[in-house]
Image (cartoon, rainbow, N blue to C red; front, side):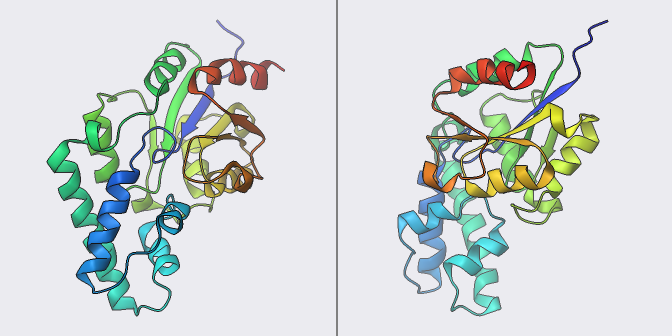
Length: 226
């Protein structure tokens, strides 16, 4: 038997595994337009990606009443589903370069488990996984439906519980400060990526930075063996 402990690599989704900004921005514009409101600037919208929608809308529409925010959330969900259906998830939310190869390389390691922690709904994540043929690769899937919004550590703590992996043997890979703050709160190593929706300057809680997906396996080896 191997003495290598079981390890867990948890990925954020939007801005980390897939570039979904076209659908996010398009759906947000349609939702705000339906309420007669101006769409927040691109940088503002991308700056809150990763938060749960109810929390996110407070940031984007601080002057709106609760009923308006509820309609904005539902309008966004409906518009996102429509945009995704028009193109198909693989086109509207393409994988970043090297993402699939890195996932497959890690999946091939017998002591490495893969997971997801995302602000998406379960339905949204399931559709994305199906669109990219990623079924069966993520043994734990933590979504906004069942947890407080990032950066609360609940998603990561549940991923550890489900897999039986110790926090010291897990990492969180993400593109936002919410991901890195969540990892820090859960006692998990945070790996920030440079290609996502938050500038690197916002990822102060990251313990490591990744410039390219193909560098991930070697970085993980350094973290765990070093």
